[in-house]
Image: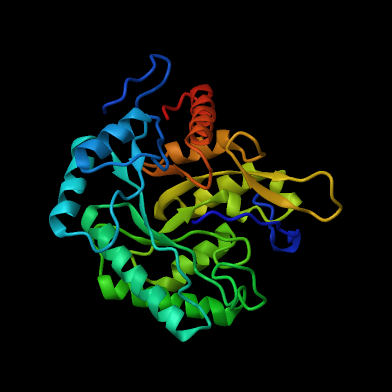
Length: 311
């Protein structure tokens, strides 16, 4: 999702305790790996340059290298380059408000999702990802009192079905990134959405940071992650790598997103769970500089090494 910062008020009543092209280190098992990726911070003029940049960062996953509207031959060339070089195209972003209270905005958002999902299917991306949106008239992905209601849940299901049915994808999935104030806001509500959607090409995007909505969950992120993968594992198509910190100098709980390694997310458990799935990418996001992404990647790879996981 596009860059955002927010404070999250505690919502503990909603928390139920759930209670290859790359040389492997001799100490790391080749069958336990996680495909890491992130923004490239570099220009490229074609598939060969794109592959070189991805490999230079030691990524084995990448965001979609082209935008909707590009010609078929270009899409085919990038798809083949990814296949030939063992790079998973993780996701096509379709960031927009598909449940906007503004009819014109909602129509444009749905059209954007249809076009993005078609691109994801054609280029062989793991998924096309969006958030479910918001009933907030001022901020497309902001909190609103009507977001977490049964009526909005039904609207999300109806609208998402419309997008999937318009494309009828056979190679990819449409997924919704969790949000703290919009469905799906928890693993259990995500499973509820999967079951209600009744579409085999609706999948899951696992972003545990966005489901840390209270101090209770903050101090037990390992439990959150284990539960999420236990009930959603077969549906997961892509994951986001972020971190989160609970401020200590305020009497109202404030949870802020931060660089991986600077917060409290249990990356040991996160990498362990992802490594049990095949070729599910872990994509870093929301950092400002290439140097921050390099530091985040170093941290994630360090956690991987101590868990015998190639990242």
